[in-house]
Image 1: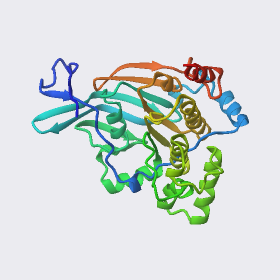
Image 2 (image 1 turned 30 degrees about the horizontal axis):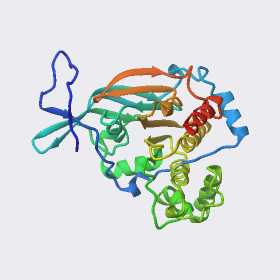
Image 3 (image 1 turned 30 degrees about the vertical axis):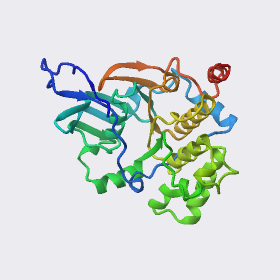
Image 4 (image 1 turned 60 degrees about the vertical axis):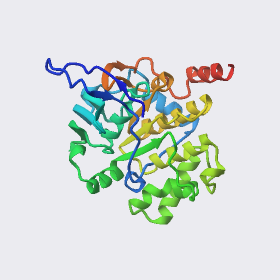
Length: 315
């Protein structure tokens, strides 16, 4: 693990211990059965037009008209590694609202993935609280967390996290199986979702028989299939080329808009962040800037997205 020493900002005119070191190379450590993610992909041109017409940047509901989905209050996370204290987050405060698309933007080691882990209950904070839909996630037992995630959360991962021995249908329907949905119903819903993400001809394929972009589409379908209230996406396009990256982002944004879901994206890529309503810049474990991006965000199916692809493919 590569640690980098940082200086913490003052809290009530006091500084944190000098021996605290910052690092964000914390891996997801959880049981896939407990997370039960879900996801979608491409939507029809008519659906895209409808979504853009209803959700044009700058015309969305104000925060006063929305209910908070996630409230982070004075959140800190310190890992103890041997004799060292490794600081990932320091006194973070933020509120994410229902139906909002938010990006946690930062370089490697900034603390952005740790923040997502804490929001999802995959890590326990050293200090502070995480409240989702009025419930203290940081105080829940593992059993209660598993049920809460199943009902409210979907996950999209950089490494896809698909079961290698299962085909696309089985991978996508997995969250529904854990929720007790009957096989016939969950299979139909999985097939419908796979068609939506453009994989209608690859439903019986296993992950090893698909490209990275196709595997991520399966991951997106899995994250959205149960229509969770919140979808967390940790570097969802990190292993993809530019064209596939844009396709994946437009799938997730379209599905979130259509289903009025909260989407939280972690990325180091400013072009990915451009799809968000709000961008939280994370630096050395703190929020260094909050950017309202609604007046300039990239719209689904826009010329701007096409230009990004053309520029990348011309190099």
